[in-house]
Structures are given as C-alpha cells and as structure tokens.
Image (cartoon, rainbow, N blue to C red):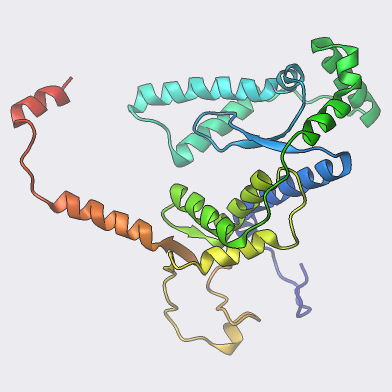
Length: 288
C-alpha cells in the first residue's frame, strides 16, 4: 500500500491479525448500535457457554426462533465438548489457550455444512421466514419486530456514562484474564463494556478510546515494555518518534496489584510450614 510519504510498502499481516479481536468488537458494537437505533430495540448480555465470555442479544425475540437459528452453534458446542473430553482423557488436564482454540477450530470445521449455490436476498428471506413460521406460527413472525420493540420499551434506560467508573471496570476485567496486556486488549474490553452497559444505545464518539487511555494512565497500571537497546536514529524512526524496529502496538502493561499477588505467592512458596500429612500418606494418595 502507499504510505503518507508517497512510498509503496508491503503490509505486515501479522499486525493485522493481532487486531482481529478489536476489529470484531468494533463490528459487533456498531452493528448493535445501528440496528437498535434504527429499529427501536435494546440488547441484553447472556451466557451461552458456561465459563466463556457472555454475548449480546436483542431483547424480545421468541426463544423458539433463537433455538431454530442457533443449530450450527449448538452443533459446534456439542462437537467441541466431545473433543475436550477426549483431550482430558489423553492428557489428564483441561485444554487451555492454543490447545482449546485448536479444538474449537476443529469442531467448527467438522460441523461446517457443505457449500450451497448462491441465492438472492429475497430467496434467503423467504427461506428464513418459512423456518421461523415452522417452529412458531405466522402471527408470531409477523409481529416479531413489534414484540421486540415493546420489550425494549419496558427496559430501564442505560446509566449515564462515567469515564472513571468505566476505566475501573475495564481494567479489572482485563487483569482478571491476563497477567500482561497491550492496548488492543484494553480497547476490545472497553467496547465490550460499552455494549454491555449501553444495551444497544449509541456510544459517544471515541468513548472506547477514552476509556482505554484512562485505563493505561491508571495508577494501578504499569508499563513494563523493555527499553530500546540502541539509541534512536532519525532515519529509523516513524513519524511519532518510535523506532521502526519496535512493532506497532507492542507496548506491554501489567498492574501493581498482579505483581503484589505474585509476590505473595512466591513468599508463601518459600515459607517453611509443618506438613499436614506424612510423606507415606501423601505418596499413597498421590498414587490413587
């Protein structure tokens, strides 16, 4: 692509892939805002998979219709559960991190339906309408939007946006899942916070970015990015003064609270205590 200096360069797709979650949350946020704003709807947060992040859904949609149009998701979860069980039998532990994502990706591949021929939007809408009527009735489908709008009117208005409180909650949510994090992780969590608290209402411009800036400037947030090894050279600097050898978005953070918790764990591990059971008892139980 052509840069602001007029020179043509290659895109670093690794950087693009690192931002895919942030892009996904932006898409989700703006989609909900536009749909709810134009149609007079609202959203709620629900837990679809125990232990996983909650998702947002539109309030007032008939549960039978939700179930009929969530068959692919149910199939993926069922297959993934079977793969997780097999992993636990083979390895003696739960799959985490990359192992879990790899198994989920395999479940999606195994349940992916065969490709169909292209169909027009009118054909798709007619097919979806027939499926919805098949699990409910014509009156329910005809009044689907009106029912959801009525449900939205009965919901309380979103609380007034409080930047300081938002930053506290976002930092706590990020630190709960990550010992170290980067700006993109905070920005993604800020968008989730806005979707959860605004329930479909449109956020103020740059609200997520302001929350992110507030989090990274928080007193409990600590920048642990390693310093530059070599002195900066004008020919090897970006327009913002950073070195071209430091990847964009690589600034790394943690929290003082997490470091204090780690220090408490280390101190406890180094503390000599009287063992609660003898070695023989421990060995017998460990061998079971």
